[in-house]
Length: 637
Image 1 (cartoon, helix red, strand yellow):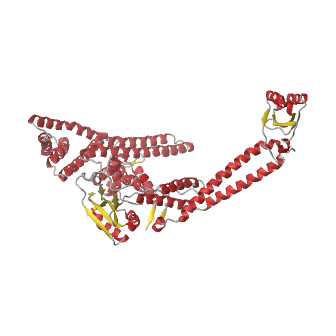
Image 2 (cartoon, rainbow, N blue to C red; image 1 turned 120 degrees about the horizontal axis):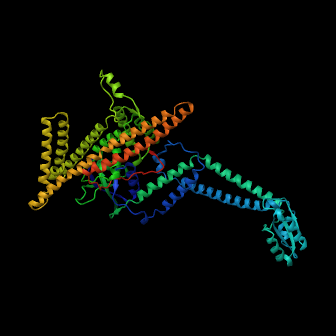
Image 3 (cartoon, one colour; image 1 turned 90 degrees about the vertical axis):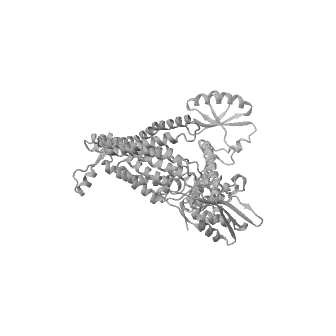
C-alpha cells in the first residue's frame, strides 16, 4: 500500500553534519530533497580515485584467481566507513606495479627487436663503432638473396669491394661490404638493382656476439622482474577486496557530499522526506548522533511533488519492479501492487504450465537467490520469476505436463481421495475450453482493475466517475459473464436474466453519466452513446487474454515436438546420445524462450489491459539515502 510521507527538516550543529549524513545513510529512512550537482562541488578528488581504482581493479582481475560464481562479499560496517590511508597507498603501489610491468615489457620488446636485427651477424668479429671511424672506407650491412649471390659477388669484385658473408637466413646471406667512400653511391645503387636488402646496425662498443649475450641477460632480468611482480599480484588476495571497498566507500561519500545544506546563523539543516510510520525512528537516528538537534515534521504542500513510498510484504514488494518498469505510482493512485502481484504470479504460471520447467525455476533461481544474494532491482526480478515457478508447477499438475510428457497427476490425486473419474486437463484436447478459461481470467483481471478504479475515484470523492467508469463496466463484465455461463449450461435460467439485468444497469449508468461534464442535452446523449462504443475496446482487451492460451500451448507443443524428435533417433547407442542432446538443447531453448515470452506478455497484460483501467503513474519513487554499493554484497552491523 502507499503510505504517507512527511516533510522533515533536521537542524544540527555544523560539526555534526558529516556524522548525521553517515548515520542517515546507514539507516535508509530519510530522502534528501536538495541534491547538488556533483560538478558544482569539490568531489573531483574522490571521482578521480574511483576511476583510478576501477582501472586498476580491471587490470588486477587478470592476475587473480577466477572468483566462484556464487562469491559473496561482506564487509563489517566499521571497516567500510574507515577511510584507511593504506587503501590509497595500496592503489598507488599497484599503479606503480602496472606501470613498471608496461615499462619492462616495452624494454623487452625493444631488446627483442635489436636481438632479431643483430642475430644474423653474431659471427661478425668487428665492432660496429670502430667501423664507423674509418676515413677512406664505408661499410654496408645487409642481405644478399641466395639466388643473387654469384652475380652480386662478381659485381663487388669488379668494383674492388670486399665483403664477408655469414650463415644463410630467411632474408638471404647477411653480409658486411667494404667499399671505397668515393665509390659508395654507385655501388649501393647497383646493389639495389640486384635486390640487395640494406640494413643499419647500431653503433656498438662490443662485438655483436657480446651484445647478444647482454641483450639475453637483460631480457631474462626484465622477465624475472615481471614474473616477480605478477606473482605478488596473484598471491596477495586482499588487493582487489580493498580496492572494492575503496570504490564503494567513495561512492557513498560522494552521495553524502551532494546532499544540499541550508544554513541558519548557528546551525545547518537538511530538508527531505520521511515515511509517516518512520518519524519516531528518525528521531532516534538523529538523537544517536547528537542531542543538540531539532526535527521539524510537517505535511507536504498541496501542490508539492511528493515521492511515493510503499509498504508491502516481501512477495508484493518484489513485484513492485514490474510496476516501476512501467511507471512509479503517484500519490494520487492506489497501490496496484497487492492486486497486480497476485495476477502476475498466476498468469505467468499458466503461461509456463509445466511441472518440469516450474521445478527448474524454483530450484535454479532459489539456489541463485540463496547463494548469490542479488541486490536491488535485479534481485526483485529474480524473486518474481522464482515465485512464478510455483504456479508453473501447479499449472503443470493441472495440465498433466512434465517437460512435455503427459503425466496424469490429477488421476493419481483422485485415487488418493477415492475419485476414479478425476483427470488432468489436456490443453491439446481442449483448446476451445482453454480459450474460454483464458477469456474468463481476462474478465476477472479487468474486473479487479475496475474495482481499483472505483477505489481511486472514491479516494478523491468522485462518486460519479466511480459509477460511470467503474461500476458500470463491472456490471457489464460480471453480468455478461453470468448470462453467458448460465445460458450455456441451462437454456432457461433465472440467473441468465439476472446477468442481463446487470448488463442493462451498466449500460444505463454509461448513458446517464458518460456525458456528465458536457453542456447541453445533445452533447450529453452523444457522449453517452460514445461511452457505449467503448464496449469494442473491452472486447479487444478480452481477446488479448487469448495470449495465455497461445503461450501455454506453444510451450507445450514445442516440448512435445522435442520429445518426439528425440524418440525418433533412439535406435542404438549413438541414437541415444543424440536423443539426449535433443532433449537438453530443445528443452533449454523452450525453457528460456518460455520464461522470456511469459515475462513479456504477462507484463503487457498488466500494463495495457489492467493498468489501463485505473492507473495514472508518473510518480517519483521514495529513494532514501543509503549505501548503494556496486562491489560489496552486504555491509554487516
